Image 1: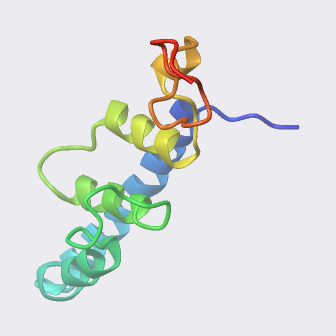
Image 2: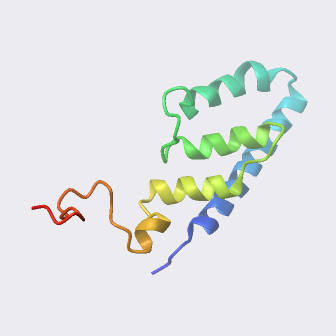
Image 3: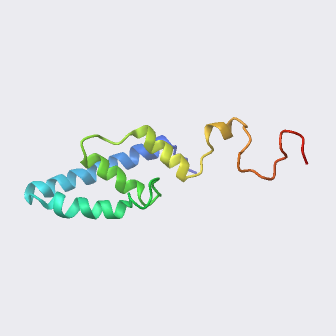
Length: 113
């Protein structure tokens, strides 16, 4: 069974997004104005930036494309964190054995019942 890490998946998404941004830039070269008048508004609509401050699995790839089309490339560490959050990877504190703050089945530390 193939196991892929968040870093590997982030790099794969990044590479796909770079290719998509290159295609969009090529279309822009052939038809000036297409990017700003048609492509960017459509991508912003699909990315749900206003609806979902934290990206969903559907929104994340589009947001990576938008990042490559901007002035600053995407933050790979943030992309990895988003992927770990979306795939339910345990947070560093939970992985270290820290009690889950939302686990109401655990008994309180003060000895109450």
